[in-house]
Length: 455
Image (cartoon, rainbow, N blue to C red; front, side):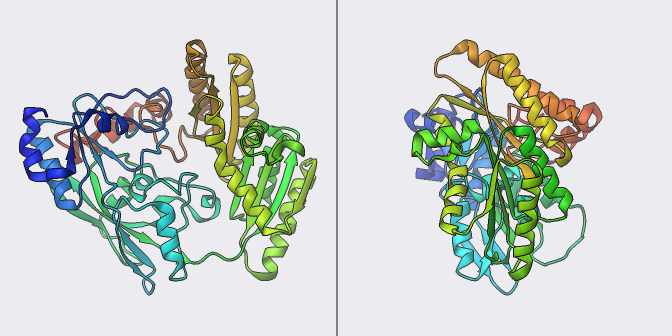
């Protein structure tokens, strides 16, 4: 053990780990191409006091801290930097309280998203944000990146549900931000500022979340299309119709064939692009909206579409959507892009992604929360092909630039991390970037919280 760490080890005991083999497992997230270093130690705090002790030690010894949830991130935001301590919240995984009367949940950051949703369901309540990593990702990590998911097209993203947080900030102060009331406008919304800050402002140790009544039964509409632009036009037609689908997801042929190869589901038999739409409007209104969704698909050139009469089959299709990333990983390293464009520009962005793939002679699959313009081009890099890796880096930057040109943003839900720093600077410009830095300097004067990330 590094001699300088011994005072911290005496205080934290087994919560501090320096075994090199374990450290390697916590050194990076799932972001291909994002650099990382071996941390000097791992802290798995059992409570907020241990997190506070760690922050004070790091401030006193000028040691950077990198917060980590389950490591499912895709931008390098949780990657270890030189000489840092990684703080992983997996041991702080308690659901402290679910209050059905106030419709709130109070949780520690290590609670897994799906575990919270299951616990809420027992009270007839629902926590909507549902990233594809929901079976593994944690609420703390979701807060760090302002995660979205399938139902965010109608119900919003993580920031829309975070009422308050407890955090360790500055030079080692524990603060409570936000509220537990349904309304509140006292002071600046510092809670919202922390959501999506990717661990650069402090360590979040407790989260108060808004809940909704449990979701109504959904009706599913399925449509196949010949190409991405026509599927994009169908998504635009849904937007123009006035219907707010509870999900509107796109999978291209590369995604369908990858899942077929792995699970033999026959997804690619009917067409090149699959659109999955759902409405959770209750009763007769749900039937009306499902018919409108179907009409949008038909009039946009669907080669086959139908309302699902079998919810088991419908659930299997949405399950297949979550299988895309692991299916593609069987084919090579997967560089997952995350851009968001105005919904009316989805078709054009899809066309541009195809052009980038052709120009760089690379394999780009595309999956999208297409109802809100959030596209995930997935660059598949064959194992050990260094030259393809270089082309993929250039293609990623081209896709980012195209998104900005279309009035979009460099990330819809994965965060900036290390991979999107150039893109963020281009998107917001120097004046706004300096505003970000000023906020960072004010809240993290010792510059220990995830330095070198985001900007």
